Amino acid sequence: MDNEKITEINNLLENAIKMESEGKKKDASEMYMLTYKKLIELAKNSHGKLKNERVKQADIILKTYKSLNGEDNTDNKISRGKKILETLNIEEPEIPKVTFNDVAGLENVKTEIMSKIIYPMRYKELSKEYDIEFGGGMLLYGPPGTGKTFIVKAIANEVKANFINVNPSSLYSQWFGQFEKNISLLFKAAYLLSPAIIFFDEIDTLVPKRSGSESDAAKRGVSQLLTEVGGLTSEKDKNIFIIAATNNPWEVDEAVMRPGRFDVKIYVPPPDYESRKRLFELKLSKIKYVNNINYDKLSKVTERYSGADIEFICKKSVQNVFMEVVKSGTKRDITTDDLINVISQIKPSIDETMLKRYQSYIMSM
Ligand SMILES: Nc1ncnc2c1ncn2[C@@H]1O[C@H](COP(=O)(O)OP(=O)(O)O)[C@@H](O)[C@H]1O
Ligand SMILES: [Mg+2]
Image (cartoon, rainbow, N blue to C red; front, top):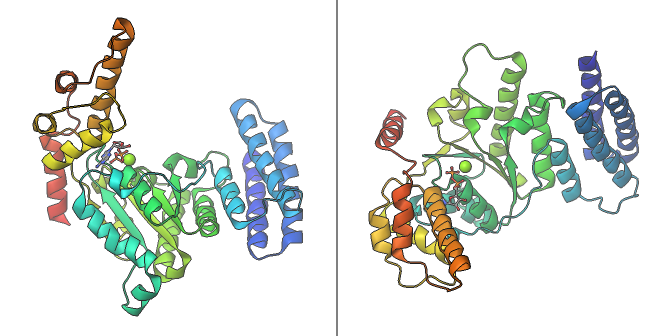
C-alpha cells in the first residue's frame, strides 16, 4: 500500500521538478502542492522516524512551492539546487575553505589535477583552442586517511565550485524513490549549482562489483549514474566535475571503471618523508606554544602513518599538554618528546600487506 503511494508521490515530484526546470512555473507549483498534500497524508499514517522524515520532506516541498509563488524571495538557481539536495539528504553544498596549500605532499596528484581540472576550468577558451579534454570523471584511490576527501575539497576551493558531498546512503534513501531517480535528481541539482563538483565518497559502497544478485533497481541506478557521467563528458559546458574516491578500487563495479566514465584514475599514496614533515608542520601551525620541534625526527618514526594519523597525533599531543597546563597553571611549549610519546602509543593505520595490494592492483590495470 505504502509502496504504491510512494511511487505516486515520486512521480508527482519528479514531474514538478521537470516542469520547473522547463520554466512552467504555474504547472510546477500546482504539482508541488499536490505532492505536498499526498505526502502529508502519507506522513499522518506513518509512525516514528519514518513519520518525522516524511514530515520533513513535505516541509521542503512546501518551501519549494512557496518560493515558486514568490512567498519566499530566495527563488534562484542556487536555492533550488540546494533544496533538491536537501530532499536527497545530502549536506548543504559549499565552497570549501581548504586550499592546495593545506595539502601536504601529493605533488603528482596535484599536478594531474591541475592539468585535468583546474587549468581547463580557469582557462576555458584556451583549453577549447587547444582541444584539451576535460570534464567527465576522476577516481582517487589509496589507503584510508591519505587525504583523498581533503584534496577534493581543495580542488573545489581552487575552482570556486560548490562541493557536493554524496554519501552513498543518502542516494539509497529509504522512502524517497529509487536510486535511479535520486541519481538523476542529484545531477539536476548539480547543474543548478554549477560550477560544482559532485564527490562520490566510498564509491565502492555506492556501486559495488556486481554479484549477479542485485535488485533491478540497483542495476538501473548504476546505469543511470554511468549515463549521467558519460553525458557530462560530452557536454563540457555544464561545469560539473565528478570525482569519486575509494580505499578499495578492486571492489568497484567494472562498468564504472571502463573508458568514458572515470577515465582519470589517480593513486593517492601514503605520505613520504617530506610530506610527513610538512603534515606535522601544518597540523601544528595554529598552535601558539610550538617552538623548536624536530620535524625530521618525527618524520623518521612515522613511516606508514597516514595524514589522518598524523593529524590525530598532533591533536592528542596538544591536548595532553593543555591538560597538564590546566592542572599546573604553568604554560609550556609542546615538545618533540610530547609527540613521540603519543606516536609510541598508536599504531600506523597503513601496513605492508595493504600497500602490496595497491601495487598489484596498479600492475593489473
Ligand atoms: N596530504 C594531506 N595533507 C593535509 N592533510 C591531510 C593529508 N592527508 C590526510 N590529511 C588529514 O587527514 C584527514 C583525513 O583525511 P581524508 O581526506 O578524509 O582521507 P581519505 O579520504 O583518504 O580517507 C583530513 O581531514 C586532513 O586533515
Ligand atoms: Mg575519505
